Length: 550
Image (cartoon, rainbow, N blue to C red; front, side):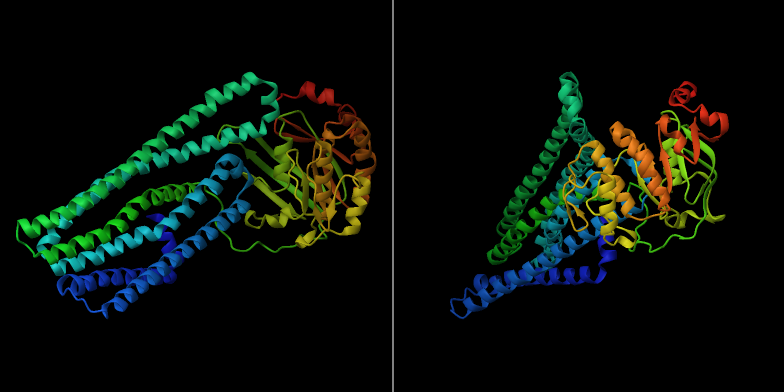
């Protein structure tokens, strides 16, 4: 299995040590059976001296077996901890457009269902490994007792294991299907939670989603999980019955065919009974390991960024004068909406408004400008120097941003990840009229349950506290009341500009276009700067009349 290969590659020596400990456990188990055979069955010893020896071997076997299981379990949990950490780290390094293509439902399923499946598999892994090792050790001991009986018993066990494997393989198929259905269920959960207001208003839509979408996926999940459990239980019962049948075969070979005496038959039966529990546990562990294999493949099918153990420590150029997009192009899919070629130069300290109708490409341009989307063509330049994509963090570190789909963090930080400047935070709280709205404990925000307009103000505070040179605001004022909207355009933006910030504001508020140093317009994925008479006529109605509405 690929999963076990990865574990062995990352933990070669610890894994080898655990295997040796498991081998010792198997040897002690077989040794205990041999001791019972020679001392209690063949010799029929009645000496009291054998009791301490017997109890000592039992305690040693229990200690070594428990030690090997705990060691392997700890190794497994460490691997899962590392796997989850690497997955999160790769998510943080993966291009935003790739994350958007995958979707949050699949990623959440990977971080919950898939990681849980791998964790459970490692908890059950000792049972599988011990079952295999003990079976091999017992086979050597049985061969020493009677090669003829071992040949027949091996054939019988081969039929048992083959039948069990055929049943378990059916389990694997259903588990693979279940994993895909889980993605759909996570989407359904997301729809119910995020669309809760609309679904409360429109009960017909709620019923449609429940009956036609969720119930279909839930029914498919139930059908496949029942079939998987059916084949799994069939495999366990098949193995159980066949192991009992093997004991009957042993006594038939010994007494009916005369291949061995009763003592050997009893030892054979005792060994098979000893094997029965590990073999059943191994068969029972297989579905969890197969499920983990499905989960492991799913996690590695996302095409995320390669794992990097450390975050880059870079500082942006503090004396930059211009940032430039040169002949930048971007498109969604092979035949999707295209933006570009874009030629744009930002100069330090200027206030730029970006306007355009819905679907004109404003938000895409914002993603390109901040370095969150990788251009399919063109270059990013700082003071005329081309920034290569592998060094894009050098470009991104110039920007703080408040996007329309704002996410609120509970830590106010500045450059280097240090707590934000308390004096600056208090200044902003006063400017944003949020002194009585936010509860702070050091640099931590204690209350994130805010109205939409207040959430945007907190997002602006979070961005400003970072003390970066450029602030991008994507329709920030759209959720503010008319009074605070005037404050934003007439007081906040000039205050920011006076403090040395470069501001790019996406806006539909044509009444305030005059406050901008430059007015840029996106139309059908193309960027143009409006000057003179064009700028005077750039009202919202004029933009909408000529916009294609893409």
